[in-house]
View 1 (cartoon, rainbow, N blue to C red):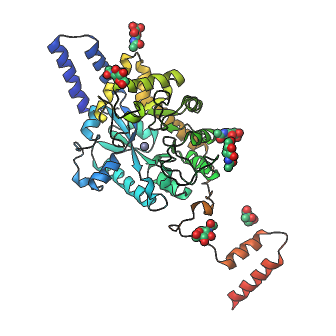
View 2 (spheres, helix red, strand yellow):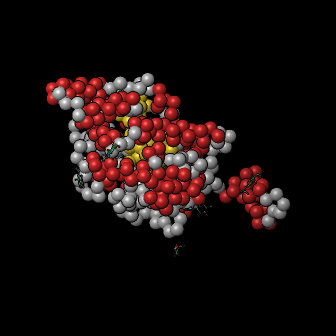
Length: 425
Ligand SMILES: *[C@@H]1O[C@H](CO)[C@@H](O)[C@H](O)[C@H]1NC(C)=O
Ligand SMILES: *[C@@H]1O[C@H](CO)[C@@H](O)[C@H](O)[C@H]1NC(C)=O
Ligand SMILES: *[C@@H]1O[C@H](CO)[C@@H](O)[C@H](O)[C@H]1NC(C)=O
Ligand SMILES: *[C@@H]1O[C@H](CO)[C@@H](O)[C@H](O)[C@H]1NC(C)=O
Ligand SMILES: *[C@@H]1O[C@H](CO)[C@@H](O)[C@H](O)[C@H]1NC(C)=O
Ligand SMILES: CC(=O)N[C@H]1CO[C@H](CO)[C@@H](O)[C@@H]1O
Ligand SMILES: [Zn+2]
């Protein structure tokens, strides 16, 4: 029932051929075959990919200009996904922080449009919106995510509509704070937070995501926000593309105490491959990436680990891991380091499926809770781009009167009589 990849077949034939030619059955070729067999059985579910961003930048989202099997100057296309044994890709709908409080919602919808198009028009892809769909598809599964909470413009109704069109995961921030959550990055001066990294409205966002069955993604959030979310979320959360802070001390990575909180939450950290996060510099190699896996496994166990490559969201990737076709090199290195096949089956696929299923179970348990009507305080989001709707004075005074069941103040009584008079007149 798992996708059978043409690419894998080609590679397998080559490795068999190499064995024949060199008469070599040493550890190299057999490890390679073991890797590819394992990845045939457990095709990778990758947690983060920014192809849609590149389609915007390079092709203005005009899919008709693009050959799905070979896209130049990017790290992702169908040929390379097949070679990489990728069975499912979470595609990010990412909108620049500069659009916050402007047209972030429109831009996010446009990125979702291009992802939904490629997931339906490209024959190798299928959009999935449930763990069942993910497990059953024979194609490369597409999972839709929203990168950056600024794309919901502080609106739970907008969040719900994103869920309806297929979004199953959202990172609370990108590199900017939202009015309700804090980013790991300080490059934007917006919505400074002091001692309140997740506001009451932010908690309502997390609770509504739990109720909907949307994965809460803490990559890009500040550590304080991540801790606050882990305190509130009743479902497991993910870091869709973050690595280990102890191995490379970059603020986008996850420190050990947060890793332990994540384990308690039964969540998942999907290791980011970007050289700057894994090697703390513009260059890195497979071995350094594997050090992140080893470290996290020592801290919280292999069952908490996945892979979130971040291809096409950044420029410099480690030697030997330059694009989505190279994942087998990483799995082979982990096998060489004595990771078991069961551990790697989890890292490749089963851990993500488990978390997704648990998120759905929480949704099912909450099915009798009504949609949240929480609103962000107006003064938090008051900008010239927002139309402020106010009830007319007559209506608001009538509501006030209706609500005060015991004592009517003389003032509101007068207001009511005055407006009743105006209406009659
Ligand atoms: C934030 O916390 C720090 C350290 O606990 C404290 O010194 C500061 O006064 C707090 N700021 C506010 C606005 O509460
Ligand atoms: C977690 O929740 C507890 C109990 O409500 C609270 O005392 C604590 O400050 C919270 N921690 C964070 C990081 O929000
Ligand atoms: C990988 O990079 C590390 C750190 O730069 C270096 O020490 C190591 O020798 C490299 N390993 C390989 C196999 O190139
Ligand atoms: C893997 O296990 C074998 C056998 O126990 C051992 O000889 C080898 O040193 C281990 N390799 C690594 C990288 O830990
Ligand atoms: C919103 O901003 C406008 C213009 O700056 C101001 O007149 C109004 O009082 C503000 N409203 C709130 C609720 O902050
Ligand atoms: C703001 C407020 O007091 N709202 C109340 C108005 O009356 C309805 C019906 O009695 C209550 O449900 C609201 O809480
Ligand atoms: Zn990112």
